[in-house]
Image (cartoon, rainbow, N blue to C red; front, side):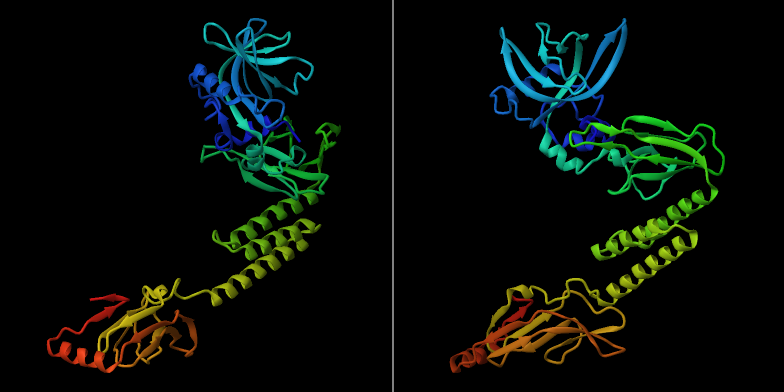
Length: 423
């Protein structure tokens, strides 16, 4: 695992912002707030000692320092250790894996300026500072593994057996991608798309330098132990192999065709088919095998999409207006009207349980109970493709109710119930 601050620097402020626990300094890398205000927020958050030595917080900061009278800028992240006051001075102690043997702490001097003391090294003036919740950040970062991740300009390189993602930055026109290699892969082939193409791996930049059309790169991934220490260094070798390059480029094109076949709103089942197709493409060793795996994948996706389309509802949410009410109590000889939530599309018709057709069902309530529903019927096949819920109409048909209805009819005052509403 690479230090998490490297991942944060690559992924930008969208992830960072959502994990801030105190201070506002890292709303955007390089954005400067009032450092004194940031310091107050940070110290207020930790001075009750609830987070001391728990490893649950991280300190992100932007600062400057000088080496040989030259100004140096830094964006960095370190682990929060504990809060302590020394002779009335508030201090926040931290652990930095770049200086594991030094005492490191942040403090504010009498002028209100925040500094970082790095045991023996030049002090760093802090321009903005924030606390981040480590557990929240890890949930955002997921199972990030630097040994499986490459960074490059969009379109600069193609890597076999990999998936490229746009960086999660605030810039919609981001020009960099993270290319992830799946678990189990120890070596990849890298095809340059630009002259002198460069890429980054574990914080180190690699370059193809002078290339020709048949140049490819063989990259053996690094191996790390449980503590994240590199036990086997990565190896990058450049060679000429026109056949290997052709196969790798064919794989990239085939995967693009698979992605094109998957709609933006595809179901999980379709996405799973696409992933299976890509794995089959990666497993291919010849161009004809690549093309066969691609065509098989596209055919499987199209077949499933056709099946989904055939079983998909013609009308989304087809039902009776206010049908969720379930039961309507209506007066004897009143008029009852129901509507469906949509009209029938071309090639279909709506048929009600009492035989009426259309989006409206209208009748006079003279029986003690009615069960009403509607169905959508295909005109060509006569097949019912959708049905609504069933609603119940209960009618008081006693002798007294009939007498009342008779007199109301003389004065034209019999009620109408439309979509469960009395009028």
